[in-house]
Amino acid sequence: MVEALKNINPFILGLLISLGIGLILGLEREYDKLKEEQGFAGIRTFPIVAIIGFILGSLSIIYTPWLVIISAAAFLLFLSFTHFSVVQKHIMTSITTNMALFATLILGVMVANHLHKKAVATAVIVVTLLSLKTTFNTFIKNITSEELFAFIKFSIIALLILPFLPNQDYGPESLLNPFEIGAIIVIVSFLNFIGYFLVKYVGSKRGILLTAILGGLISSTAVAWIYASRSKESPELSKKYAAGIIIASAIMFPRLAVLVYIFNSALLSFIAVPFTILTIICLISALIFIKKDTDVAKTAINLGNPLNIWNALGFGGIYVVILFAVFYGNRFFGESGLYYSALIAGLADTDAITISMAKFGSLEEKLALAANVIITATISNMIVKLAITYFKGSKKAGKLVMLIFGTVIIVGIGYILIQLGN
Image (tube, rainbow, N blue to C red):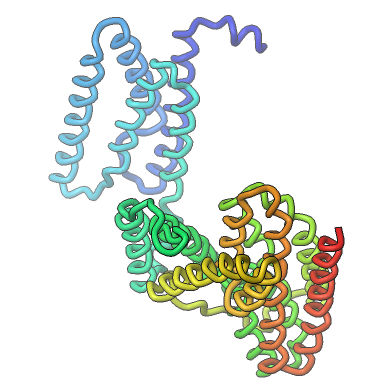
């Protein structure tokens, strides 16, 4: 079979790939046409357009590229006239099918130019966008004006402001790089964006475990604060809320691992073992506590605005402060200064110190130290969440969280001591 494919005529192979692309797109449009009871192109038209594009591309290689340019312009003009003629008949129709047809023509041309894989990959993306129409409509109907403005602000920061920030080092010891700081703010904000919408559209009212997992993608401290309060309101559900706090904290470790991988992939192997152990401790204990989740407990988590500009700038400020604390702590106090910085930073945020240490560990001999400092910061953060649960939540929730977080803290400290002994 493989040998047969190798020996097939290149023109026939390209023709078959173009046909396949047209069938994929045409099948989706035909199905949509049956549902909407409108549209003029479907399972037959799209393959024909793809084949026309392939033939035009093949001829342009032999004769002139203008053949494709003129034909594509004429086809686009034809689609425009077709659309306006339908609109004049007071028939509501979407321009999406027209654009999909034009894309199919271009994909056929790509196949003719031996861009087979790229054309197929593009076709898959296009058909995915076409098939997600209902999902997109549902999403847009449920989005709030605050969320829309947050997305616009994020786009402005990521696409209009960040690219124009100077990529140069400034300040004492050349520690400040505006572009680098801006990129860190964008990356962390993007991760928070994902977590926010997962909580809203997936986690809300789907059970404590799932909601806590998704909430942990944004802020395990926020989950601890909310669930601790609810455990006091409903003491009979303390075990479930304690499990939610623990599992949200478990998500902190893989979330920080993602940041480490983004900023210093070499450091990932140094934190993989301790983070895996600490995550497993939290996950197993949470599953034991909750056993079978029900809809009795309130699970919705309000994590506020998906992108608060002041919070984003505040994170940038925290990162800069930690950057200087790490540098001068290491200069004046050696390794102990880094651990002190981690203990203080972990009280407020683990992301900033993790990113800072990922950059600090750029040299191979500093990787083990950077990993230990990150673990120290997570231990500090666990102490904060333990205190929140113990003093703000019910007695039962506080005792359960103390048992598990105490174990995590002891294991984390033990691991650091073993590494220092080596």
